[in-house]
Length: 235
Image 1 (spheres, rainbow, N blue to C red):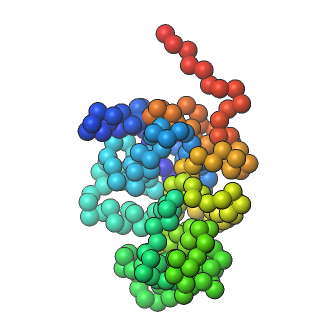
Image 2: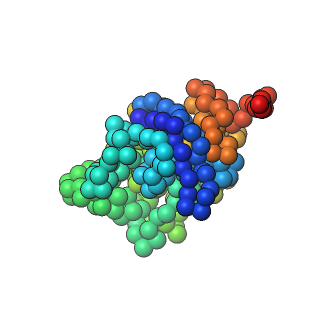
Image 3: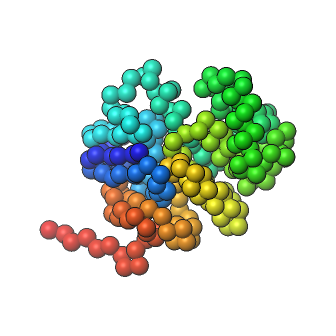
């Protein structure tokens, strides 16, 4: 589903965000991307979404070699992805239904598809009764559920969640993560970038740990950090 091959990303200001990064995420995986702020997590997500280009190396996502993807092919590629953000990014002047509907409208879905898919997505996240509410009438957890419904409505093969619980209390955070896990159990590949150590440790999923632009650990079932710190032998 996602493969990085010896990827280097150097920004124009000289910052090396990623240094020789390689990893694989298989179809159907639930993967946590962990590491401190500035470690390179956001750059990895931007490369997956083709918002940035690697300086060196190759990125493959859902069968696409992003290095040869033409500009006109990018919208089609992105329809196979769903994205959930920390700050929800809902449209304040649209209802819950309209926020989710909008995600289908921009992909030029047919009206009959929209009428079928939007109610299904809202039912999946438990918000059928809130369809006519506006974002400012919802709790933080409910707003994030709308964001998940919006990410799901086009039936993506990959969901990317960037700190999806960062603005939520612990109880609500766990509810959101259980919902994302349910999405994964339906067959959707999931990547979650997070600082939430307790959630990562409890869920025991695939963990890719990054620090200073380098992968320091890649475990099929791991924790936020090793019980014994990794040591680097110099020279």
